[in-house]
Length: 200
Image (cartoon, rainbow, N blue to C red; front, top):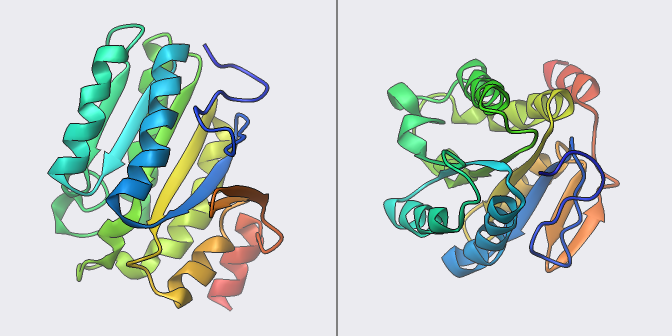
């Protein structure tokens, strides 16, 4: 199982370590799956716990089919946005941060020493209460990543998100994968500072 050092991601261009919170920019469902499936497959082969939230039944089916490659039982959890980010018909930062912490705690209780977390973020394009807190949520998610044996990927479709949202989201992720290149993000702002700026 993955514990320390570099994580096998299934993608040569994606180099991650425990505690990382990375933003992945892609285009379309195919671009999403070209990152999502190898990353989860590598985790299943490594014996890691994998928790994934996707934004459509089709995406969920594609991920669920990977379960047959699991190295052990109860290794892959797949959720839809409606039962996670948008549970109850709205988005709240507190609920979603608690959602991840509960899953990470449960993974440890089941004996997993590392957990891969992935969220497809297109739910934030819906007209529902709370989506305006997306960027603050992303900033606070860095603290979750730092507090657990995990690596978190947030997936953003460049064909659907505006440049304005992308520019803000970038500030909340220490690492960014775009165009097949992973970069240490020079625009990253630490959570405390970012939240202070947004409250000013």
